[in-house]
Length: 296
Length: 296
Image 1 (cartoon, chains in turn cyan, red):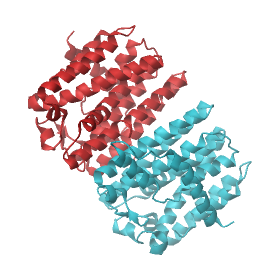
Image 2 (image 1 turned 120 degrees about the vertical axis):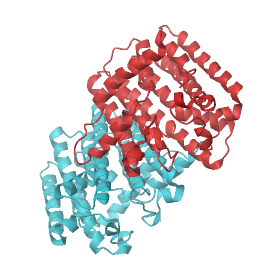
Image 3 (image 1 turned 180 degrees about the vertical axis):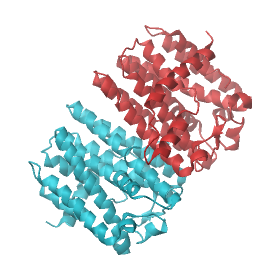
Image 4 (image 1 turned 180 degrees about the horizontal axis):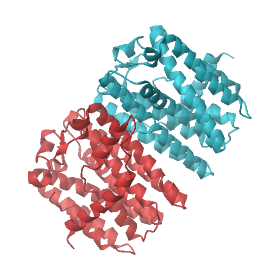
């Protein structure tokens, strides 16, 4: 299996789904639709929707409610990047080689486009009620989405990230918290929602959450490793940009070798849980390995 | 009936409900909880939750699902103020005599606290599923909340507001759009959710939406009128601040007399619809008049 080729293929499939949920660019407020659509279609890897769909397939999903949630999770991921890039946050003018949203549309529109995407993510996810008879599945999925994206999830991680930049120092526990919240929570949500909508029971959803947790943290550590060793052309941003922002990373804390080891340990545990499931999804297993051993 | 006294009493009651839904200030990310709670408890009039509850009473509501939505609508209103006050938006350092959220907690935390409140509003509203057996009522209410707060509602109004400041000119249609979206939509949502949760049918919910629409626009025009004629001490912000921000208001467009007339016309229509309902709520009727003829 050529995982990179498959991932690209699946990312294109996800794009064709997401695009149907994006707002038409019309009305007096059409600038915000343009800014939102620009941000979402700026060429992400679509890992979260792909993980959602693959977990869904793992449990033999056959509900119609998956698509709105695939779009919603990507909107939430995108809004977090848009706000993260703002001058008062990381102050980035480029992302994946293109102007960031605020660089292109102005700072006020960067704030509003992020707000718009977060709100629209919930509007979109709520459409799942229109196509799924089992309302409980949708309710559970909405609760996971809101919880993992919020102050006890992703936003909570952002807060610690921003505060560390000011404080110039971070404890081991805080860096674990940061990686768990800022990166792992949305990965967990993606996989959990896939499982829930496919009808997995609470125990299995819990196991899926653990997989997402491990993979999310390993993914973020691998990001740090790449920042140290990476080829700028492969990375799409300048290597060493974390150092520029005075961010203390897991690698700076634990050292390069230990970080590499931890990535493999976390990934191994995740794959172990996955292989203990009564069902299998070969692509998902390969994806978990790939995510934590990629070179871009 | 001393409406101001009653309103203050009801605002205190709302506060005692809302406060139960606010996050505990704890964990590595506790700064954001502090910033969110500071923003929500900075002393608003709580008009939206009050309108929600009074409309609910109008239709004889007896569901338990109202409280999470009362808290949620106030969180959404609050986040919109927090982001509106940011340097890239209206750049306000004071609100109701206190430092704005970004003035007190820094710009990055102002952005994140707004995001946190918007996300937490949905987390909070989703709790209604735990206390309401009729899931359809909650689903309908969630859809109204998300729609009226988003790019086709309040955020859409914000976009036009921000763009007008840059463009230094506004058409009559655009100013109507702005007032309808930026101010009326959340008022509509408040009243509609009250009606839906109380079991009102679609036709009645539509009528309630019209009432909210008229009252919201009248309320915003009255705000402009007060900005021209108001006593700074009563207003709590500097009179003439709209002029400072180069905002073209309804009053500047239509003139003072016509604006006054329109406020009364819109209010009269709203009260007319309300009095055509099979039920009555004397306080709600008085409130509609008061909102559009207040002096602060």
